[in-house]
Image 1 (cartoon, rainbow, N blue to C red):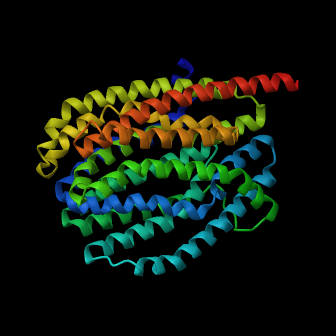
Image 2 (cartoon, rainbow, N blue to C red; image 1 turned 90 degrees about the horizontal axis):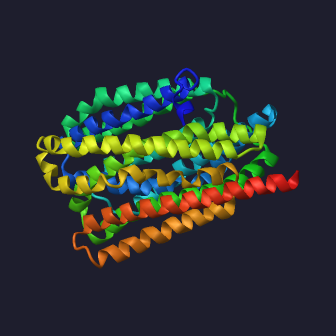
Image 3 (tube, rainbow, N blue to C red; image 1 turned 135 degrees about the vertical axis):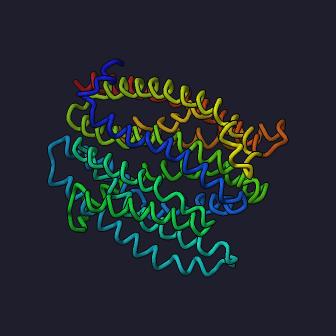
Length: 420
């Protein structure tokens, strides 16, 4: 485990992790400032829209997911030409996605009767979706240490922009929307300028169908998991109102902030592990490193949770509009050390084990829905129902995924021995 702490050897990893972890205190500071000036009803509107942003990823149909796996794997295998073809094809398909979305977005938007309060928020949300289609492709092309060094610098810059321009929320909800737009546009331009592969879009039929074959299961797994993650919010939207969503908004911010850690580790290690698998065809080292990451991260987040718990009372007095959120925030802190359940499909994706990916998503969905139903029979407060459901889901899915991952590693090693 101590090899993980060898700073000279892992300096790029630590720089990347630090650039990501830096967003945690910055997100807390900016989040508190946002909640200071934006009332719960308006935050409820924004939280509702961000839930539906998740569904826009359907256009990708797994092509980007396939590239994220096949690009580093091909590099590890020494097939640079094919790796570039994967990237060129994905870029061409991404541009097609953007054109399609721009054409259908107005048609979908005018079919709804939104009041004036929603119009600006919807416009910002649509721009976020369009830019995210391209930045998702760009993010998948960062794979080497030099690439992640640049990506770290980008994250430092975006974090600084978040901190410096957060005062825009003083101007109310429109200022908040301008702030959100500035962040996503800045990230878009920086990723584009420092993109590691300056390729032109070009469609390669063979590579496209291979990306679909590889990426579609990864996409449906990812899409299913993203949808499942919105179930607690959808439950609140369905059985409560915007005010409840506003009170719950700090919980969303808390969990999404803590989730930066597993998301960062996955984005860094995924191309590394895929590259190594292509080079060595050995999964044992991947499993050992994953367990170390689980342990170190659990300790780190637990320490962070203890600090937040003892200081949250002093912060909340500055935000009287969200005083009702305080007991819910304290309860939701229990979820934080278990957010690593989201890494349960990590090895499945690297090895392209579709059966295990489906099993993970299915297990996650069943536990999430069942826990909401069961807990709602015994707990009256609807926000408590959602929080305890998320806690139960995180713990059970984490334990089950660890067992499934261990079985997968054992099966892989046995199959490798048998083939020799």
